[in-house]
Structure formats: C-alpha cells, structure tokens
Image (cartoon, rainbow, N blue to C red; front, side):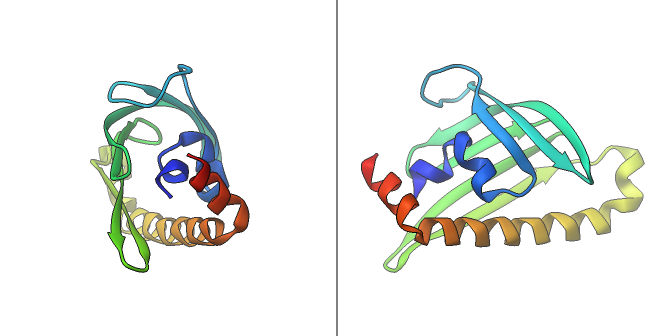
Length: 136
C-alpha cells in the first residue's frame, strides 16, 4: 500500500482534488524533494509545487503545500492484522480573508478526506493496485 500511497504519481487516482502530480526531479522521494501538483479547489484549477518535509518509507509522508493556502498534509500508515489504517491529517492557518468560511472549509476538507480514503481503499482492493504494490 505504501508504494501507491506515498508516490505522488498515483494521487490523481484516489484524490479527487488532485488532477496531476509528479516529482519535479526523477529521483526517489526524500525530504526536500519537490512535487508539482495540479489541483482543483472550489472549482478553480491551480498549479503548485509542494515540498516533502518528511518521509519514512512504509510509514508516513508529510508535505507542505502552498495553494490554496499554506498547509501541511501528512499521510500515515498504521499496520493492523487485517491490513492497514491510513491517517490523513491537514494542518494550516487560514489567511484572514478565509476565516469567515472556516467552518464550511473544515466540513469540505473532512468530506473530501473521507471520499479520498474511500477511493484509496477501493483502488487498493482492485487487482491492479495489489499487483503494483507487490511488485515494489
């Protein structure tokens, strides 16, 4: 699962807001690596370069994104006998002009995270993704 979860090239397959994502350099991900992402937020298409803050293969990936506003995204795997639990955490500070919308944004991000993790689960249960993960 980590080979799909922590590879930005697979993000568009399971994250609805990510239209395209790929490492800027053709090297394995590591702290300091950059990821170019094309995303959609509230119907607006944006291009951004995210930075890998921390990566522990098979355990977690934390990146800093800058659009639509600065935040950190952390994906973490927790192994359990039945498979794995994925934790997705978003942290950031809204610019003052977004503050009135913060309750709506919190709900929007929570729903998007649930939808994305449901997509990830469905994809990981498909034969194609299981094979991909075992090839790594």
